[in-house]
Length: 126
Image (cartoon, rainbow, N blue to C red):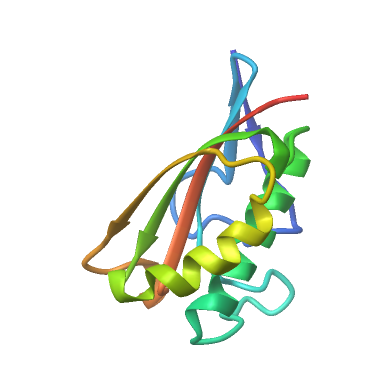
């Protein structure tokens, strides 16, 4: 059995998908981009500030699912430019200081709405 997760504290889906799905004791979060849910706009063009907003958005979705960043077991980071890796990684590390999930980081040809970073994750519930 699966449950669709939705929260107004993170940007709504911009296509035919859910913010997250709960199934089998896990939550599978769709990729988040740096949209401020209050304005519907990107927070900045800076990859560090974008990473910060993306992780805030993921945190809100995880909370709505009964989880948190502490429950994250795997992330996938998509960068528009691998040259942004160090700046993204610095901000990412502040959110995953003690809990260091498995991670893959890839450069994508293009991200939704021309974001510089997108992150998806899988987390434990509870």
